[in-house]
Image (cartoon, rainbow, N blue to C red; front, top):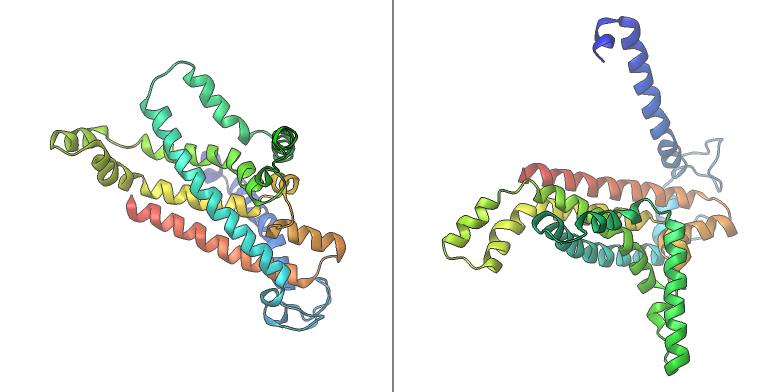
Length: 284
């Protein structure tokens, strides 16, 4: 960078690289956005004219996403799963952050590495492992007692468990990073003034951690919402949106309504990410 500031040629190369890199990232998103408004049955050129049908039309063959019951059901399932698993991951991540930042215990480093491992294991492997493990337990219970434990079978509860296994790692790291910045003298001062540990936690520590808690929830929700590999291995009859879209592409092929869903998700996820940044900025 220092040499680039002195050389016009290196400056040109650097700026060209940055421009090409961001165009490479943005081009697929722009293409998806453009074809979501194309008045054609196929997401391809030539351009047939501007339309909102792929969002709001209520009749075939241009059934819009807001009238497509299957897509809306998948969206509902994704939001339901995302909220539950994110809340659980934030609660577990908060406990992990306090455990690893405040306590000393045997094999702490080994357990920390074990906590981080799910991030580097492929999602397909996580999904298959959990499916086999849960099915083995469910089959054993069924054989021994005759009770069919449905929540250990493919479905939403198993999806939540599968995503929880790696989302907890993410929330733990986010919250622990914020907790490292906390001045423990504030807690000690509150305790010296007569506050109970529960009150100190509720009025001093957790308010300081709130930006990290909120950011961890948002990140977990977005990762859960777009997760495909792990979810595919654990899905039952109530499929989330990613699986529903994949099934639509396999059976019907790509249609502009999927581009419309993509545009909707880009706007929604971008808004959540922006809200997370604003919360962090306001609290800092």
